[in-house]
Image (cartoon, rainbow, N blue to C red; front, side):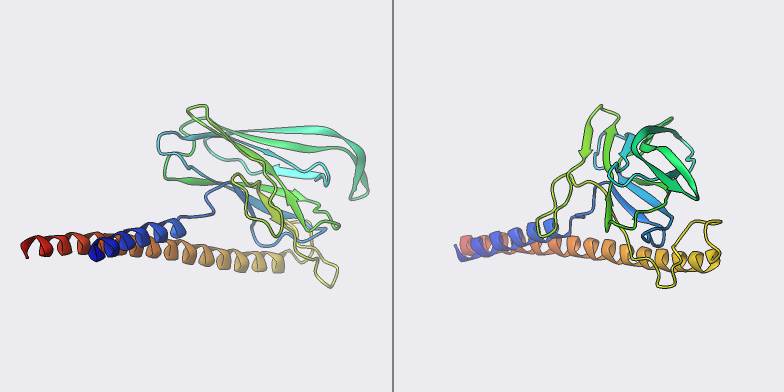
Length: 247
């Protein structure tokens, strides 16, 4: 009986470690390439993983915030994807570089021309956006992910501070404070300090990449440990049972 309990505990421990090491970030997310400073410009990547084993991701629809509309939205061309930009009239016109903007992008849709994102892969969808609001700490982009089997996953639940992450969280872009000298992080051509901004962007991207690699490695290690613990527990139980039978 004792051996059986130990075996069961070992197997349970293995399953628990595997559950903890499973990637909690396997959903559509948005991250800046460098920084996304209030009042400035940024290039952001919508990261889309394929979470299905028997279907490919063939469409991504990202809705842009209407409470803080963005006057400039320019997606980067991507081989294998058709891009459609939807604009809507604004209730209150925006002013950008001395000009009034009466409409803004409210949705960007990527539709695969070929296989799309196949099982076991992810893809990034870059978009240049600006001018970022100065009176907000974050921007929420609700997204719809469509698979080749017609399944649609709605990443539209807004995460709330102090609460557990929802099952289908919407991508959230955190905005950093503007620099003290009054300059904003921007894309090329928007700021005279573009060289410094590019260097900071490269350093930050490298740091983010290193952090991501570390997280992935930790997850894999924990997964292997879980399998080993579970297998050891089961093997112990079997051997103990055989010893009692031989006795």
